[in-house]
Length: 417
Length: 169
Ligand SMILES: Cc1ncc(COP(=O)(O)O)c(C=O)c1O
Image (tube, rainbow over all chains, first blue to last red; front, side, top):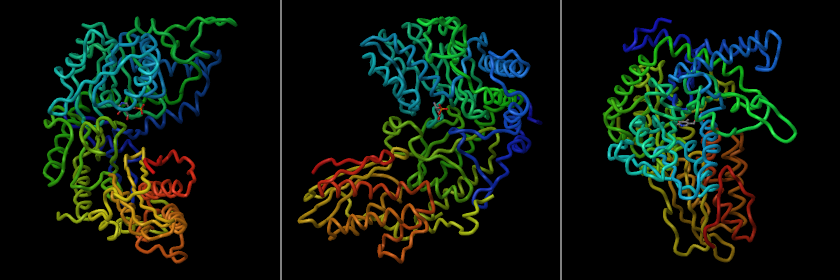
């Protein structure tokens, strides 16, 4: 792969050549894939890792004594180390594999939530994805704890002041989205983690959108727990990560019980396996975890700094082109420097579903709707938005295709170009 | 790479966005609740957030008029607008029959338009060729079914894909 040196624009032609799906057409047009916040496409190396595992190594892990089991276990555990390195964790024992971000957050809500009492406060933000909201709502129903929300400031951004207004001596848990899947904004997690620490609260970060797009270091963030999904960062579906500080994970009760997560089992009771296996009950998603390793190799080879710079440049170009269209509203921070890779918008009075259908006919894939963030839609005062989201293989010409498609949609609904 | 079905029978955006549909979207008919409503119902599409409220005035087994509210895409809103016109003056029985036909048309792209006269509603026949938009077209009709069934003293089976409920009446 011939990626340019870190910090400079990527060689997107060379990158694109490694994603077979980008060669396909949709309705007679080249695919322009701008739905990366939902899930990203997969490079050949990831696809090969998946088939390679099944064709050469398939075995159950952690229990077999034969060669295949040994190889599969080593490959699976190697990815755990890769993940630890990718997010700056101090040990691979801090990395738990789950199915996705949602499951990681549910694990935390279930285990941490069990310790809460009536009147304890859980602080979220106005911009949470349902996966970092609904699990905590379930906790409040079980425990009598209450939810508090960090509001958006006038620039539709989570900031230190709005956070200060929500965090107090009753706060037990602060769980916030690092990078919003709607606004594209990046929250000041380190400062908010400081506030959480000051009141003795646990700090959880939903990194589903940030881990793919910007360098994420759990130490720098000051987080206690962090969750993200492989499928949003070139990896396969079915793999999520939960990172937690070792002493905290060690102190948590298990989430799911069964095979793999135990040490000694009698008829009456059991003792738990060492970290991280205590949280990985049953046969895990071995193949997809191993393929996720290939995705991390791919990202590392290009470098997260270079990816972040590329995404920022494309975002700036897109904000510039889109904001020149008459009747186009962009949500989120006005300054492109404060956002990354995600642009939610509405065009004219055309509903976002109509926009998405019309764009699809010219091969442009975007998302439309509430983006699993209905409360945020209400805060923004819109029923739905269109959303374009970028990744390392996207190019300026694809944003031009988006703009052309929008003009065509406008025409169909009776607006002049 | 296009699907076989599409290469045999190319699908055009014009099939979906007929003039009649765009006209009803831009200038909705019978928008707003009716003062003489005997029954009100609402429904929404959880996957996309479209919503429709319907108020129906029924007297002596006849639909005297309908009003609708809500928000959503051109297909959901124009489907509701066209429905309010097409249902006015029908007997309960005829309205329910018509609703059944329209829903068949919306979901089946081989529906025979010559078999029943659906008037302007035939403009919605293209929706069946856009599978992700079928629910948009169906929403208003599911709400209507809920209202009419209630008016006839029946209950409709719960459709969790498009939840509907009677709000008064
Ligand atoms: C900010 C954010 N959090 C959580 C999630 C949930 O991710 P998953 O569906 O992989 O569990 C998403 C994905 O859409 C997201 O964007």
